[in-house]
Image (cartoon, rainbow, N blue to C red; front, side, top):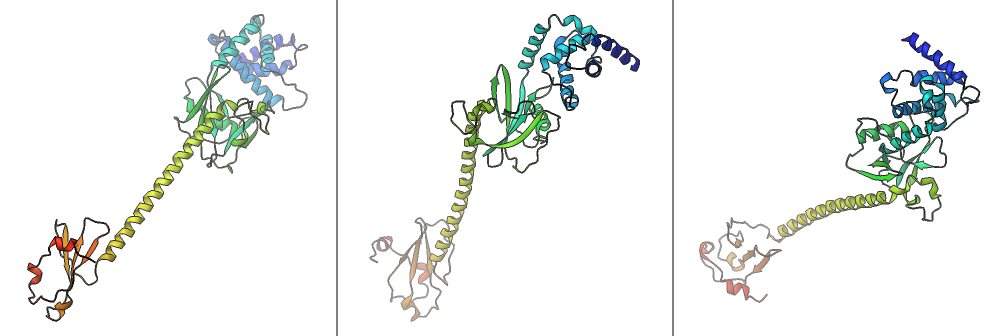
Length: 360
């Protein structure tokens, strides 16, 4: 295998010498990039130019990350880079004449690939996390990226956020909480991830892709370009389409949170009121009284525990408690001096009409 790679590298070198004077990238760098990303593509896939363009894009990222970090190497756009690779590799040179057509097909295909990411909020939902691209210093956006083949959307969002911020949202993400929007024929789905502390440390794991990661006040981000704010809305052209639905989502969740807190307070207040009512009812009961079991009777009768002495019966009282009223209604009868038998408790009954018509 090493011999084959060396042979291919020499073949690429021969093709590259012809372009060395007209290209911004030295031929030996093109040799290195082609051997890393193009030569090992299976032969049956080489005819798929769309597939090859994605491989060339990987080579372009590698070139920007590792070569352009050194002085003397010029940066170039992906379009110019693809054209140089097609000119450099012998078995791809036949496609140079239709380069514009190939590039447009690849660009349209790439736009059709869905993008997934996350809207990261602090616990108070007052700030949102935004990232700034390494090559787009005047633009902010949400951490997101293209989905890989057979990759689930929420897993793509977790991967892209980890690459661009260094933060793992797998424990926070809810597959059912997201905002979708189509921008330039590209579907963008952003999962709403709340509860991330603003003290969290963010560090992108990819080279030369993300310049800055910063929390932004949601109220300071415009919801349309027509809004007059202190911040230039053109800096947030990829954020603005998501701001209105995001603010609605935040307002709805705050209302639900407040309702849950109020329900908790209402339950606590109800329990306290029940305790106070129980204490009030307990205070209505006379001291040193015996309470017989009333069964299902509507009215319970209590008598004073006094010695069955005739002189003591002069002050004997009968108390009637009506359990159908709240609080218990206590009715006191006039003193009765005619009791002479200690067995009156077993036979005596009040006349209800006399009790109700009694003048207190």
